[in-house]
Image 1: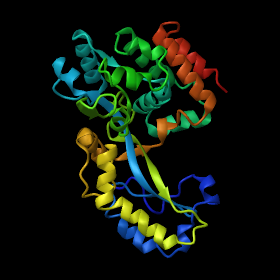
Image 2: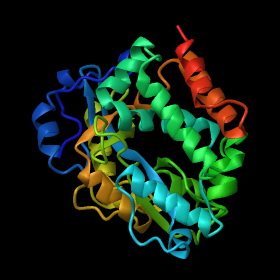
Image 3: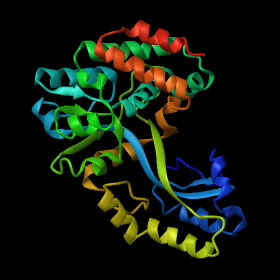
Image 4: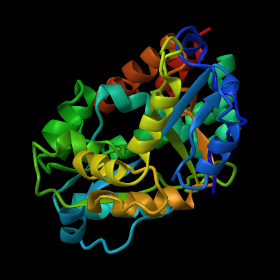
Length: 321
């Protein structure tokens, strides 16, 4: 399954000033052949060629806490997710935490599960924040807060306090984040038992567990290099075979090659990755506008603190123009 096609043009206009135009290099046939070897194909536009070291967002979970709460299967819908959270609370475990940096991603992901990916992107792009789906998301978060499913510290967490001070310290069982998280936290708790599951489906009209935020870190070739072919060969060497595996192992990250072995910390994430049939950009557009992003964060933190309710949160967003 290909999430990125070589003919797809991506909006990286700033790259055109310093990234080599690969279309002029006679590499097209080679690139098409390399697609078959790469786990998730490269990002492409006429003035930008980059090899994607892919990541995806999902729910990392502390397996020890889930087992302690008697949870033996991961949730795929919202009712099951609420049941998991309740079992954790009953066992004296805080289910979810979040840092301020990831609040927009939480909001965008949840909105995609309510309104669908296309409508979610449209809502943020057009600032149509009076859409009923916005209130629905605010009510979902309000319920999580009222039931004690979200850590009270989420009202004041400044990155990386939630992931480092709660999740890594195993005082919270789950956090919506990405495949990079094991690498970020390995020095804080190298004994953390990692698990993952997809952000569950919520409403019938929304996206389900097949839809995810897919992104990448990339290699590019400077357009001013005197050695473009050597640079191309180097990037290929780094993203296939030995060094691809070394990089994945050392960073606990997603490898490029189809035949590479994923780190054990990402075993569950690979299954989610392989089942993904629909992708969307970071935070489903919730961070594309700074005004919207600021209100999403502020309103969420107020909601967790108990100073506003869901309707007031929705009203704050609807007031943006």
